[in-house]
Image (cartoon, rainbow, N blue to C red; front, side, top):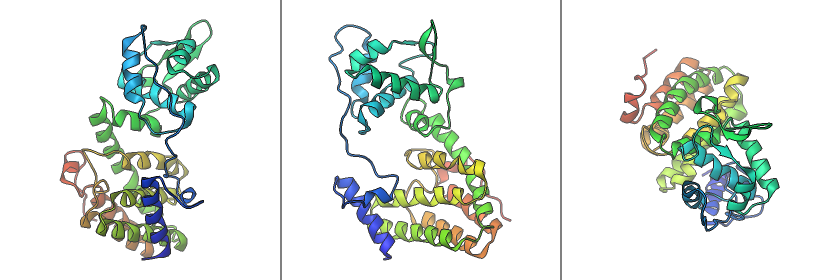
Length: 295
């Protein structure tokens, strides 16, 4: 096993257990922060019962500090429909119910406004915006939709979008011939192979996410590069319909290897075909996207 593979698998296991050597997890952007500073769940005596119900349900979300936790909770409530379009959001009420400061509420609403979920106007206040105004390509909104009432639509749309983005990215990446990038992609395939042999799904998924994100980033198209976050978010969404990347198996690993081989030889057509085959490894996907055509 390469040094990189050993380090990455150790980091993944440490992150899962809450233990890590100094600086080790900082190398990987997917490492979760410790679950601290969770937003407290008030008693919700009186007031709007549906707001209280969702607050309790969202209290177990991953630790992101008070500001991040409040964004997470309010975002989930809006996306799930518990806070419907044109619903007024009163900062004072939010601060009181979630037991956070006015500053935390204000900054959280600004984040939600940037995502298109709410709007703030003078003499009108802050209100929830309709779905048509949301930034549906925002990774947080993708996650919230994927685990809410719209989960089936979100997963189908993600599968369709990946089918559009990634085969093209693979074809373009084959024309760049950067040895450092090719080696990094090969390292990710090696890590996935070792992880699969050990039944380590966590390490497999993290190496898989880095493989696909890196491939898009080196395609040489800045607009495609901005979409790499969408693919990373899609790879964190479990359930069907699923692509070949979502479930570790020999076929998925082989297709990743074929993509690397095609990149090494600069064969864009082969890289594109291998990516299409990878994205349709699981039969469930064939109901969503057409089978790949032979070139």
